Length: 508
Image 1: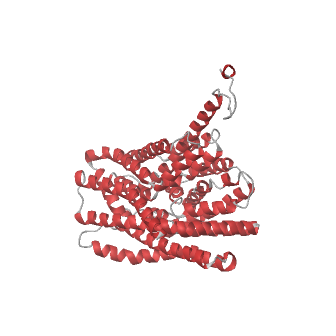
Image 2: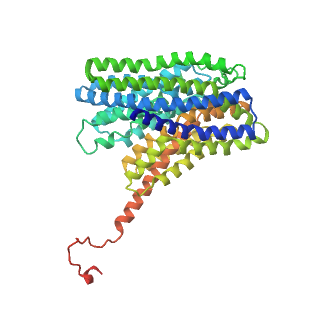
Image 3: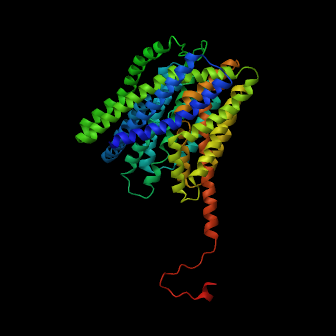
C-alpha cells in the first residue's frame, strides 16, 4: 500500500514535468505548424509512455540505486583500503553512467560519433572523476580548489580542440548528471562521508555531482583528438522514427524489443556488480535485498518505456517542429518559444523544488523557495533563448561558457562553500530529461533547416542550461551573506527572561 502511494506521487511528478511541454507543443502544432496526424498521435502515445516510464524509473532508482550507492559507500570506507575504494568507485561510475537515460538520448542524437563509443567515453570520464571525488572526501580536499584546477584544464583543452567537438563535450557533462547517476553518486558520497566524524564531513558529501560532470567533458575532448568523426549523413537520427498513421503501430512494436535489449545491456553491469558485492561483502537480509531487486525491476521497466517513447514519438516531433519554425518569418519565434519551454521545463522539474527547499533551509529562510524558483526559471529560460540565438547566428559556444564559468568560479570566493557545492551539483537538476529529449531535437531540427552545422550550433543547449544554476544559486548565496551581515549589524534589545524585572530606563 505504501509503495503504491509512492508510485502515485512519482507519476504525479512525472506528469507535472511532461504535460506542460506536451500542451505547448500541441498548441504550436495546431496554431503555427500543422503536423501529420500520425506524428501527432505518436507524440501523444509517447507522452503517456514518458510519464509512466519516468514515474517507474524514479521510483526504482530511489529503491535500488540510492540504496546500493549508500551501502557500498559505507562498506567500502569501513574497509579502509584506498586502492579498493578507488577501483570499485571507478567501476561503479562507469556502470551507472552506461545506464543513464539522458546520455542514451544524447548519444543517439550525435550524428558524427558512434553511439557506443560516446557512451563508453563519457562513462569512463565519470568513473575517473568519481575516484577523485572519493579522494576529496577521504582527505577533505577543498572543492573550490579542485573546481578551479580542473575547469582550467577543461578550457585549456577546449581551446586546443576541434570546434566540432566542443558543444558535444560540454553537453555530455550536463546529461550525465541525470536521474540515474545523481541519486547513486550522492548516496555513495554520503556513505563514504559517514565514516568521518568531523564537522565538515556532511558538507564534503556535496559537490560530487558537480565534479563528476567535469569528467565527461575532458574525456570527450580527448576522444575528439584521437577519434575520426564520420560526416553526418542526411538528417539527425532523432527524426528517423517519424511515423505515418499506418506505420505507427509497427514503429512501436519494432522499437520495443530493441530497447528491451539495450536497457538489459545497460543495467547488467551494475546488477552483476551489486550481486557480487552482496555475496562477498554486503550480505543484506532478505527484505532489504528484495526491495533493491524490485527497485531494479521498476528501473528496468521505466527505462524501456522512457527510451521507446522518446525515440519513437517525442524527439521526432521536436525535430519536426524546430525544422518547420525555421522557415520564413517563423524563425523569429524560435528564441521566444525556447524561452517559454525552458521556463516550464524548470518549473515542472521535481528535483528543482527539492533544491529550492534545500536552499531555503540552508539560508534559514533568508532566501525563500519561491525566490529561488523564480531566479532559476529566469536563468534557464534565458539559456533556451541563447541556445536558439546560437542556432540562428552560429556564435561559438565558448563566448557563453568562458564568461559564465569565470563568473561561477569567482562567486565561489564570496559565498559559503556549501552554496558553491550545491550550485555545481544543481547543474544536472536544471538539465533534466526533457532538455535532452525534446529541446535538443528541437534545436537540431531548426539548425538543419537553416543550413547550419549541427555539431557546432545545435549542440551546446544542454551545456548552457546546466551552466545557469552555477551562477544563480551562488548569487542567491551572496544575497544570503549580505542579508546575514546586515542582520548582525542591527542593534538588538537585551534578551530578558520571563521572570526578570525590566528597568525601563535601562532598556531605553
